[in-house]
View 1 (cartoon, rainbow, N blue to C red):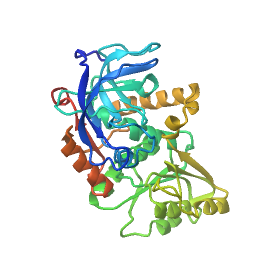
View 2: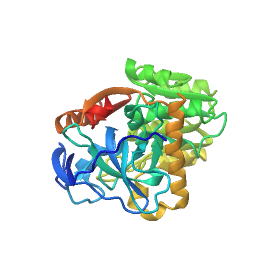
View 3: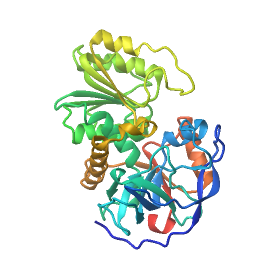
View 4: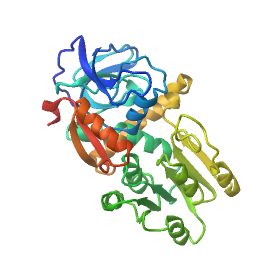
Length: 366
């Protein structure tokens, strides 16, 4: 386990988050106290983080009903500076990667000296010494999402379709399916040269340009009309959900990231034909929904904690040996202006391919 000097912990720091209970975007700088770890928690001095759609969605909707200010930045790589009661695997000075609870605070901070955030022990893993803080911080939330969707549902030799193979979750899911979980054929799709190139580089055996090609017809051709064994759809698109549900073979599995069909706006439900499409095929629908583990605490039982701990350890091990590595499309400083600009681009669908890394502690991130 890599040991580093742990900085002295201040009483407070200037975080970056939302200060209004609704429509809290753009984010602002706000002074907040450094939290103290409770049982089974570690306090991390955050060196690097990365951006996820969850951050701007929480700022816009505050769907956990938090009382602002709420600091964002759930992906973390940094140094443990305090541990709570019951923590056995980590000590002060350990270099780690972690994911903060999405109904808690994150670690974005201004000033370039690092931020502070809590993570549960099960969502924390030792950072290998040869893995950079940047790469480690680009993994947690997206890796766990892909692992949650694929690991329990994929079988050796499966034909798998993963739309959005150039996305933050998508490019990790493609690597995971092709290089670690034993898929026989991994098919992906993307729009634009960079996204297509990333999906191919991630190990997809076939990649289609959804802007130029009829993906459903191509999958029909590849599978001799049978359909794929497994779809993992992390696109958050109702139109896309309908299309990919129709690509699943009879008795296959359709995995969706998040709350699922008919609920993509979170402000209201719409009628979706996905259930009927899957029922007609006798196919199974699985919702890989990370947020429910924080909105329904009873779900975070011993089995769930063991699963997430396994996911975080796999993220570090597979990144270390090059099987599942994040593509960093851009690096930014941890200031409100820089973060707001990139989150706005992400929300509009204009962000860079792969992940955007946030340098929170400039000196250690370099």
